[in-house]
Structure formats: C-alpha cells, structure tokens
Amino acid sequence: MAMPSLVRAFVAVFWGFLGIRSDRGYQNDITKLSFGQVAAVGIVCTLLFIASLVGLVYLVTHLH
Image (tube, rainbow, N blue to C red):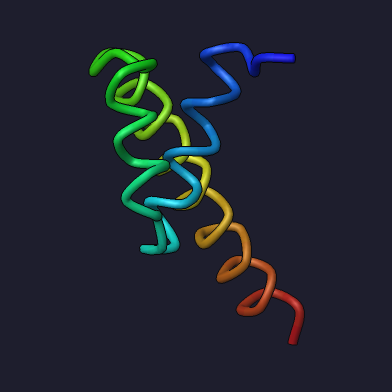
C-alpha cells in the first residue's frame, strides 16, 4: 500500500530535520514529491518546533 503524498512529505521532512536520509530514500522522494509539498510541510514543522521550544521555555521559567 502506497503512502499518501502528504504523509510521505512529513516523513521526508522528519528525516531531513534529523539529518539522516538514505540516498535511495532521497531519490525516491525527488520523484514522488513536489517542491511545494515539501516546502509547506517544512514550514509547518518548523513552526511547530519553534512553538514547542517557546512553550518549553515558558514552562521552565514560570514553574520555579
């Protein structure tokens, strides 16, 4: 069963954030994903990451 392209984009961005992506997986992503999909998912994931860091800092600074 093939993964939907949005899920595939999230997986590709996740591995990209970690910095570990096999060449075969990278080549597969290039053929199956568009730049717009990867860019949109990357922006959303970056904003979620920043929001989680801000929330964590807020909790740490206001709970002691």
